[in-house]
Image (cartoon, rainbow, N blue to C red; front, side):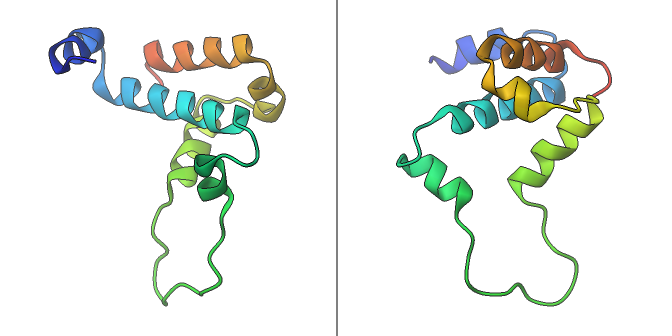
Length: 99
């Protein structure tokens, strides 16, 4: 997509809401992927090494789960299976003032 069109698609919306909605949309997309896809394998991969001491760094999944919690979505695993339900939740996140 043309960068100018991307900026126009965002319009006067809150950019934080737009980013969070796109993150939720990608989260749903990854969950619908076949099990042998590269993106799903990377998402589900868990390293064998341990993390260094100190405060753990935020992961992408942590941000997504905090967005889901902030929107008060309790049954996201059921909603993610139905594409239309998930799409309405993503649209709600895009216009929500809570995020």
